[in-house]
Length: 120
Image 1: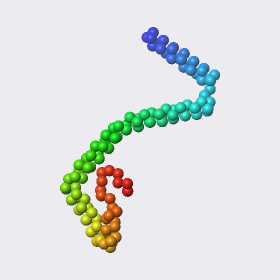
Image 2: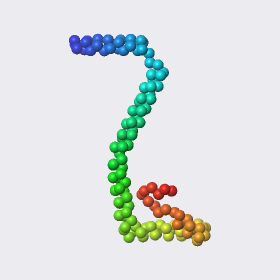
Image 3: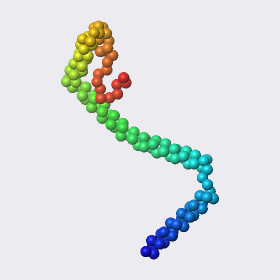
């Protein structure tokens, strides 16, 4: 019980002191702006550190994905699937009314489906 009373008295005294300090030292807009800018800078630094820490993991993941794609591209079934995709695209374009030349140009300019970024 004594400890509880002491804690309450201590917290009350702390609140009064804090209140008195706030009244004698009011926070200005300039102080708030400065604090906001400081917080922004701290957040930018934390984000930069996080990104820097992520780079090795991202690099390893990209390497593994590229190696998997190369391995898959070596398989004969992959080449057959790619050829079937291009042939089906070409024939479908002709069925839709494109000329053979138009269908060929569209087929040539169409990227193969990919798990990675195609740039299109």
